[in-house]
Amino acid sequence: MPSGPDTTDATTPGRPARADRTGVPAAADTAPEPGEASVSAAGPGAGDAAAPSGGERVRRSPEGAAAGAAGGGTEPPAGGRARPSGGAARPSRTRRLGALLRREAARTALAAVAGIALGLAFPPLGAWPLSLAAVAALSLLTRGRTARQGAWTGFAFGLPFFCFLLKWLHVVGWDATFGLSVIQALFVCVLGAGLAVTSRLPAWPLWAACLWVAEEWARDRVPFGGFPWGRLAFANAGSPFTPLAALGGAPLVTFAVALAGALLGAAALAAWRLRHTPRTSRTAAGLARTGGLPVLGSLALAAAVTVSGYAVPVHTKAADTADIAVVQGNVQQAGMDFLGRPMMILDNHVEATLKLAERIKSGETKRPDLVIWPENASDLDPYQHAQARARIDEAARAVGVPILVGALVDHPTKEGYVENQGIVWDPRKGPGASYTKQHPVPFGEYVPFRDQLSKVISRLQRVPRDFYPGDHTGVLQVGPARLGDVICFEVAYDEIVRDTVNDGARALVIQTNNATYGRTGQPEQQLVMSKLRAVEHGRAVVTAATSGISAVVAPDGTVVQRTDEFTQDVLTARLPLRDGTTLADRVGAGPEWTLALAGVLAWAAAWVLGRRARGAGGAEGREDVQAEGQQQ
Image 1 (cartoon, helix red, strand yellow):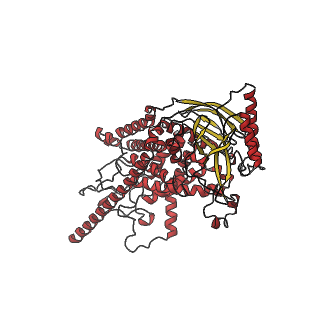
Image 2: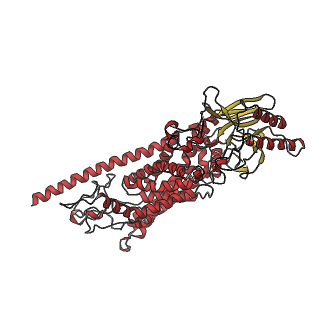
Image 3: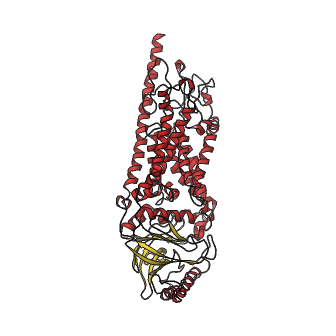
């Protein structure tokens, strides 16, 4: 795998090649690098390192054409920060900060543009090739930088990305959008530091891809159970990378996307070197090393990674089928107050089911084997409210088949807590087996540190009771079908969906309520997760939403049917039921942990090699000083 162009420094005649930060001796190279800077007479106060003796030039590493034009100053020497010589006064902190901001302004702006480009790769636009371009841009902007510089560039990339991606959260408040975006951008900040440190290693695109997996691994788990929105895999649920999910799940898709993007960055670097190689030095060997072969090799590898998914078989053959009906009852209004008066949403779903029963009775529609209602279809606890129970009984008896009902239920033993459940409602026996959502949404379904935060953020009082998490997967027998129930945002978490399939689910149901975020792009972002999960687990996926988007997704990720938002509708389909598992189901989180660990270890190795190189450089400098003293 090409590791990008050689970024080592020029050597001084009569002195052995100086080691770069990885400890690898640098080869002499006469070709100018993008962003190369000669030491000027401005001195350390200008932010550049002082010129070494013997006329040696201080050169910063190539970050690519865009990064080179960004005007970022030269890197500090390997030994650390540049220090003023003699008795020169150290510039004030304000002046140093101002100089830093001026040097980093263009690079920061480019990082922000790249972050927004990554946001456009996700629905509702869904331009997945932009995810490759965004990864390539971040690789270029962090290449050859210090860890701190890379961290800032990562943050400048991540903050606008998440603000753009999560703008649907403005329904709650723009401060909520910004606050969550800052938290998520901190993970990309760490990613940027890792990309900068590992960029001098051989095969750096490989380590970059592993670090992307590590970043998503962390975001998937912390804080408060994690928030995996915005993973590269979710931007590629309909791209050539998608079939890779059947081998290693969403993490493998992220790895492939990041690897292809980083390789494109390597190709851009090599092309820049080729363009700026003096014509007089363009020997065959020099071109092979600095230009042509790295460009072609990186592009070829990027193309091979991109199309590798086509070689992965996607299993879709059904062992059995079940006829289903998905009821979208609709709500009265979008936003935080979608519930309206009590019983309103339940009545909507009952009425839609009664209309379905009339069509069945008239012969217009075949009787399904089961009916699926969405999350929160009953806004009152049917175990506690006789009126709610009677209405669900009416709908189940009218249609004559079991209904999977989404309902909010008071916790049976813990006073003040509520459970978000999917309940199998039999037309004769009433409520039966149920599934309780395992991963309630922090600050949406429960409030961490409620006593402390509620005094500061009055808006949290809109969550009057905390949801209590379930303790088992949602495998439920609904009529003839053994379905795996997953509720709302749980579709974003690898382990919840995987455990449900491994526990015997033959098809997946995503009960969701997106009425709060209707017409904001959030329902589309969630739907692509269903598409990816279908391929990952070889299962049909049914999304049932109160106000849309409800959909039926085939095991190959194809959306067979879908509804519009804020309409009352009923989908009917023949659902394929499968028993086989994919390789991703069998290996579990193994690929994710392996790739993430490889990225972290590469970072650690680069740091150790850099320390050794700086130590060697310091010893060499001391020897030179001693030699000069002896000569004097």
